Length: 93
Image (cartoon, rainbow, N blue to C red; front, side, top):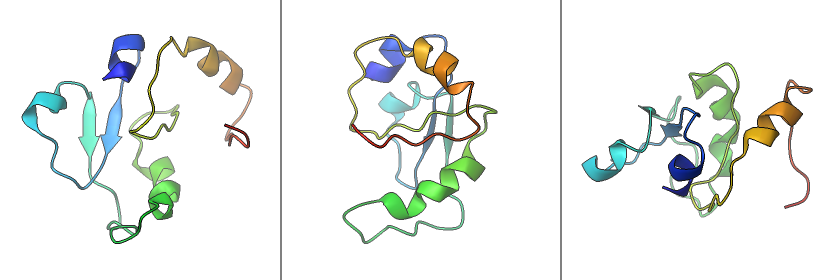
């Protein structure tokens, strides 16, 4: 919810195989299933599906965030910075 509150001009896609309760569906512009099945279904860390996000995103430009992140400010400057890269991974959080 913090993402929708702070990024009002951005489209948000949720990629999940979980059922999304009706009261939360309005927070997302698109809800898609994880392609090629959920490779991390029985795992504590769900990183096995990360590579699929590149294929699953309906957008030309995508920033991947975990659902447990709390976004407190506008991330517009991220888009400007990331325009210089085709693909970018953070190394320090």
